[in-house]
Amino acid sequence: MNPMLWRVVLGTVIAVALLALVLWGLDLQALGRTLAQARPEPLVAAVAVTVLAYWLRAWRWQALLAPVLRVPVAELHRATLVGFAASLAVPRSGEFLRPWLVARRHPVAASAGFATIVVERVVDLNCVLAMLALYLFVLPRPAMEIHGRWLDALGTAGLAAALVAVLLLATLWGLHAYGDALGRRLAGVGRRLPAWLAERAGGVARAFTEGLAVLRAPLRQHALLALQSALMWAATIAAYHFVHRALGIDLPPQVTLLLTAFLVVGEAIPTPGLIGGFHAFYVLVLVEIYGVDRQSATAAAIAAHALTNLPVLVGGAWLVARGDVGLKRLAQAARSHPEA
Image (cartoon, rainbow, N blue to C red; front, side, top):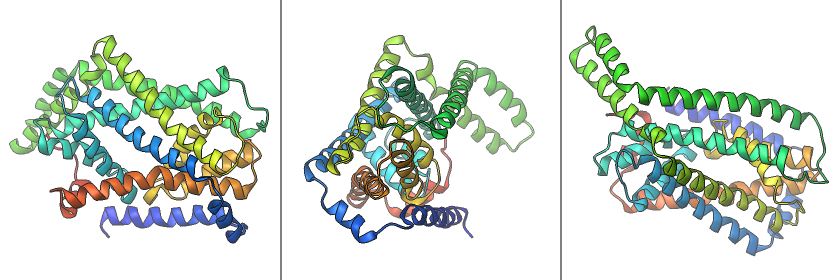
């Protein structure tokens, strides 16, 4: 079986199992009525801030790419929508598609673009850890919070993730700072390989390390990245708060900080469309930590998942339909690694 198809099949099985677990024992008709009674205005607001979040992500990507090449935000926004839409079908495929789409139109190596995606992921991990720290140590804790093993486990996981984030940043900084030395070592190894393969590997390595240039950018560039990340994540978590308001779930806004940390874990489960893992962790937080009834929590998970994913899915599909990027070429790119 094709490896990509195998991942999709396995992910689908996991998604169905997790979704069945979430829905087990619920009155589905009553769940449907709960969703149908949601207030439309907050739901529209949730869609609006989700659309804004993807534009902010593209704006931040422009800053990450700036030391290599200045690319218009509009083009990065299109690549972001197509890439994230592809990831909903084949998990993680968008991480390769996004730099590939940019490299097709601009003189920047796809491997350099991929390096900026790696940095983006590390920045996002740091943002989630910052939100978790804000919730646990700075902001007032909600009165309805049920203290238990989940918060203790999350604190331990947060410390481990912080250590990983520091190690990743140090590794990436070292790769960029000593990229020339790495290139010379690869050249030495390359003498034992066919010339075309050695040249290809060296080109990819050089371009990848060049794509990490933002790590050594001036302080003002890092301040801009911090501002962009704060705005992007603020828009993201606002969508969850609007969903709660629409369904009449009375939870203070800071709850979404803790919820987001859990959802990052759920979304790491490689299922098509983020189905299953997102829902399971959403319900877990609302029910086990805040005492929300399962029906309302499940309705919130379903609404939040739909409203934060459908905009990018529709937008990405529309761009593919109207553009010159065919589905066949997208599928080929999803199976390949970035090239120099």
